[in-house]
Amino acid sequence: MALARIDFNCDLGEGGGDAAVLPYLSSANIACGFHAGDPSSMRSTLQLCLDHGVAIGAHPSLFDREGFGRRELDVTAAQAHALVLYQVGAMQALARASGAALHHVKPHGALYNLSARDADIADAIARAVRDADPDLILVGLAASESTAAGERLGLRVAHEVFAERRYEADGRLTPRGTAGAVIEDLGDSLAQVRQLLRDGSVTTRTGERLPLRADTLCLHGDRPDAAEFARALHGALRAEGIAIRAIDPAP
Image (tube, rainbow, N blue to C red):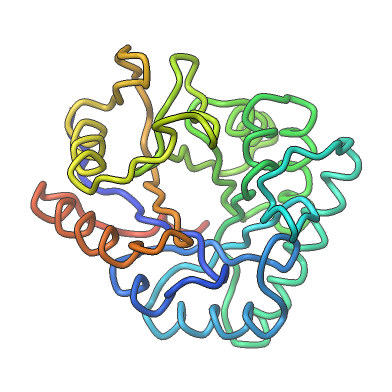
C-alpha cells in the first residue's frame, strides 16, 4: 500500500550547505560535535531549523572527528550510553535556551551501523535516549536491532530508509567503500524512493526485493549536491501525493 505521509530528514551541521537544503525538509539531525560541528554550529543550525519550521534532532556520534564518525571504533555498551547521553544533553540545553524542544535522536555513521546489528549497543543507545527524555523519538535503520531496542524500552521509534544508499540482502546498508554503496545518480535515487513509497520495498545491491517499513526518509547533507537532491526528492514526494511532515511529537 502506498504511503500517505512521510518524514523527510537530513543530517546537518556537518559543514554542508544547510540553508539550501532546509526548505525541503520536515526534520533535521544536528551534529553534536563528536564527528562534526561545535557549540556555535549547533546553535546556528538549530536556529535555521526553527526559522524553517523543521523538527530538531540530535545526531550523536562516536568521538572521531578525524574519521567523520564513520570509522568503526571499539566501544562498550557503557561508553555508548555515556557518549549518546552527553551529546543529546548538550543539544537539549541549546534547544531549551532557544525556546524549543528536542524532537528526536538519530545516531551517526559507525555508531548508527553498530546499533543496527549489535543488540547490546542498540540497548545502550535506547537507554540513553530514554534517560535523556522518554518522549524523544529514536530514529534507526528500518527493521534493525536499533529499532527493536527502542521498541523494547517503550520508546517511540522511527524506522528510517535512505534515498541515496544501497542495501544488502540482510537489510543493512552497503558499506561505504563498496562499489555502488552511495547512489550518485539522481534518477536512480528517485527510482529507489518511488519503490519505497509505492511498494514498501527496495531492490538490494544484489537484486533481491527487500520489504522495508518507511517512517522517515534520509538524505545525507554532506554530499556536494545535497540541495539538488533535496529539491528533487521533495518534488517527487509531492508528485506522488505524499504529505511531507515530521513525526508527531508525544502528546
